[in-house]
Length: 165
Image 1 (cartoon, rainbow, N blue to C red):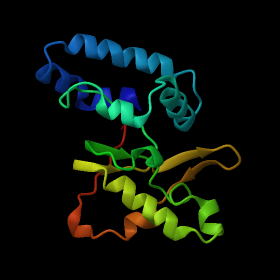
Image 2 (cartoon, rainbow, N blue to C red; image 1 turned 30 degrees about the horizontal axis):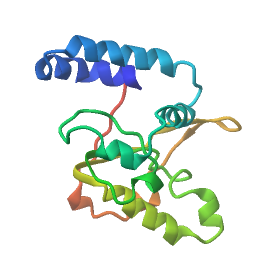
Image 3 (cartoon, one colour; image 1 turned 90 degrees about the horizontal axis):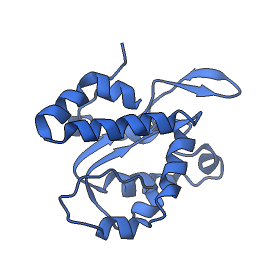
Image 4 (spheres, rainbow, N blue to C red; image 1 turned 90 degrees about the vertical axis):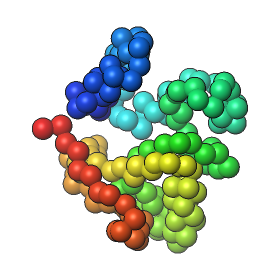
């Protein structure tokens, strides 16, 4: 995924935006190398977030507000915090809402969590879901957007379809 972002314009963005773009590109290369040890995005992000050893409050308070960094957070850690840009991943049916919560009748709690997560963005919010995902038991499966996305007012957002083709 990181390589796809780089191939589709991020390298040019780095070149035109930052005088130290080579160092930033090198860091992203290291992140790509590190990520190849993991078989799933979920495992990779979980491991990466544990490595920092910082709580979300410590990260939010560290440094100047204009410092550039990527902060990985769970929805639960994000409560009370805000960021300029937020990417919510796995906004797909069967992932969010959590199927177990749906079975147990806790759909309103999941809806509340969706609201909490989506209101962490001050300027830009990206609600992301894959078209295709791999399931250990079923193989590749076609994903549908979360029911929570279907509840949004279509006039208030722009839909993008991004592919690696």
